[in-house]
Length: 364
View 1 (tube, helix red, strand yellow):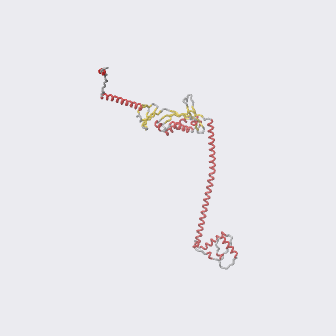
View 2 (cartoon, helix red, strand yellow):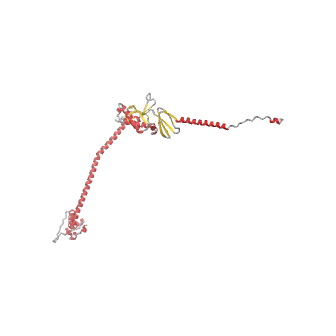
View 3 (cartoon, rainbow, N blue to C red):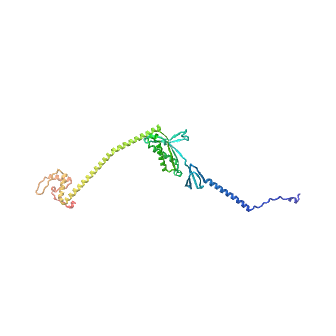
C-alpha cells in the first residue's frame, strides 16, 4: 500500500492568465472601426465615381434629365452626374439612311440585290401613267430632346413623310421627265418638301440628302390593272356627264313651267281680287242709292234680276189709271214662274201695293 505521502505526490503547474488592459483593447477596437469606415468611404467613393462619371463620344450627344426633367444636352467629353438622381440618354448623331420603294440586303450595291416594294415605289405621274421609283433618304438627329420625347417612333414618321413628299412631287411631272431629264429636279423638290414637313413635325430629325436609286416603268400586270381602273373611271365620268346634261336640259323647262304656273296663279289671284273689289264698289254704290230712294232702287234691282233670270218673260206694267182686263191664264203662269224662282210676286200681279213698301230698318 502506498502511504499517504505517495498518494498526494507532486501536483502539475496550472496555466496563468493575465487580465487584458482595457485601454489597449479600446485602442485596438478604434483602429478596427477606422479601417471599416475608411473602407466604406472608399467603396462609396468608388461607386460614386464609377456611376457618376460618363463619357460622350464624338458622334454622340447626351441628354441629361434630373428626376424626369431635361437639364442639359452634352456634346463630346467627360461629365459627372448625380447617381440615382440624374439620368443620361445618349443619341448618336451619325448619318443614317432609309430606302423608299425597296428593301436591300447588306451587300446591296456590290453583289447583292434589292427587293421591290410596289406599295411604296409605284407612283402616278401628271399624265396619268405609272412609274416605279426607288429613293434613298439620308438623315440624322438634329435635336436629341425632340427626338427622344416628341414622338414614339420618329423613324417611322420620317418614312411616312418621305413617301407622301415623293408621291406629291412625282405627280407634278410626266413620266418622261421623271425617267429622263428631270431626275435632279425631282430629287430637289422631294428634299425641300420633306424638310418643310419635318420642320412642322418637330421630331428632331433633319434630311441630309435625297437621291433617286432607280426609275422604271411598271409591269404588264400593273398596267392592265391601271387601264381597267381608268376605264371604270372614264365610264363613271361619262355617266356623270350624261346625268348633268339631262339635268341642264330638263331643269330650265321645269323652272319655266313652274314660273308659268306661278304667274297664272298670280294673275288669277289679281283677277279674283279685282272682281271682288268691283263687286264691293257696285254694292256700295247701290247701297248709297238705296238709302236715298229705297223703293226705286229695289224696283230697279228687281227688274235687273228678272232680266237675268227670265229674259224671255213678258212683263206688263200698269199705271193703275184705268181698268184693264188681263187674261187670267197669264197671271197664273207668271205667278207660277215667280214662285218657282223663289221671288216675291210683285203687286202688279197680286194687286197688293204693300209688297213695294219697305222701311230703312228692313233694308238694314
